[in-house]
Amino acid sequence: MKIAVIEGDGIGKEVIPAAVDVLNAVNLDFESVPVEVGSGKWERTGLAMDDADLELMRSCDCILFGAITTPNDPNYQSVLLRIRQELDLYANIRPFRPLGITMDIPYHPLEPFDIIIVRENTEGLYAGIEDVTQNRACSTRVVTRKGCLRIAKTACKLAKGRGNSITIVHKANILKSCGFFRELCIEVANENSVCYNEMLVDAMAYSLVLNPERYDVVVTTNLFGDILSDLCAALVGSLGLCPSANIGDKYALFEPVHGSAPDIAGKGIANPLAAILSVKMMLEWAGEFEKAGLVQSAVDDVLHKGLRTADLGGSASTNDIAKAIVEYIRSVQ
Image 1 (cartoon, one colour):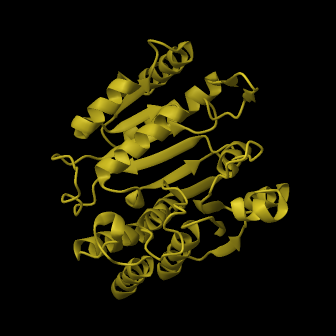
Image 2 (cartoon, rainbow, N blue to C red):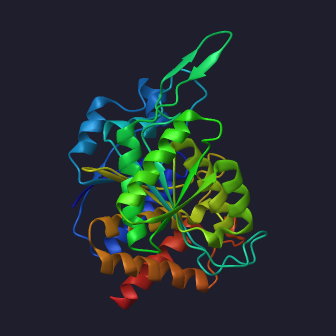
């Protein structure tokens, strides 16, 4: 398997090497193809990513992505949004479940939960159609039939392997584009004999805080999915525990949900588990289920032994966690 490896900026340069170490530990037969993109490249060359970088990604089977710092410059184009659109990575899959050791974090639900947010990833307010003048700014929200149908089908496919139920999250009482999304999701659910319920996005945020255990597969539009994901990360205990996959029909990109965290970059204290669990999702996507299970077992073992980075109330370094994960994998192979 050929993997484009993008460390990016900030803590991406620390957590992605840890994730690659885990790929090596499970003895995956892969070729690592480094691709430099991000604000560091933008500062040097004026381009955060060029066409050659995209072609290099297209030559690979999938992408392991760290994090990108977005400079405060109106001319800067988001690297990740462009990758998602150019490679048509239309489904952002974000799983959230407590890992069994985070109950002493300041707020944590009393009941266990296991939620997958299925977020439309190429349209909505992130379509990049914007106009800014001195007196007004306008962002166009794009919601297409094609985009709605394929994200709804993705959610229903996931639901078939779980509780056969989806929650459609929208704001159809205000936005006609949300009504369009809602209707098409219901149509797909009915066609696939998947049970559904629906929630307004503001009510969903309220309900997730109080009763996350009520939800299984949640399907929603781009912006809403982005916001609700961070809420769910807080319920899990840290963004540093949350992986994600960006899936298209031809390509896939795997990344931690967290950002580049420039405030802690270079200190060696970033939590690498989100990146490592993103590797687990990559292995599942590639059909390497035994190796994926090994990664999950290693993460569970390390956390249950009390090894934690600062975001989880501990003092372990990035390297401490990565080393312990690798040692566990090698000890059981």
